[in-house]
Image (cartoon, rainbow, N blue to C red):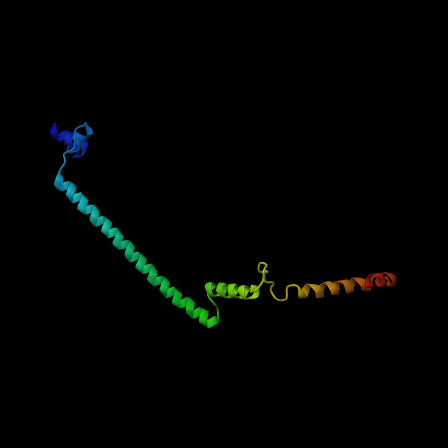
Length: 138
C-alpha cells in the first residue's frame, strides 16, 4: 500500500504533511543554507550587472573615439559645442538690450522672395494693356 501511495504521489510523501494541513518541519541548517545561497545569488547578479555596465562603458568609449575621428575628418562639431556657440552668439547680440533676444533669421531667407515678387509683377505688367501698366507703375 505504501508503495502504491508513493507511486501515485510521485515520491512527494515528504510534502504530504503540508498538503494535509500539517506543519512543515523547520530545519535551522536548511534555512541558513538557503540564506547563504540567496546571498551568493544576489552577489552573482551584482557582479554580472557590473560586468555588463563595464562592457557598455567600454563599447561607448570606442564609439566616441570613432565619432571623434568622423568629426575631425568632416569638420563637424558636437551638439553641445554648437549649442554653446549659438547661445554665446545670442548673448553677445543681446548684450545691453532691454528686450528679449530676437530669433535669428537664416541668411537669404527674405532676399530671394523680393526678387521673385518683382519679376512676377513685371511679367504680369507686360501682358496688361498700356494704360493699365501706367496705373500700376504709379
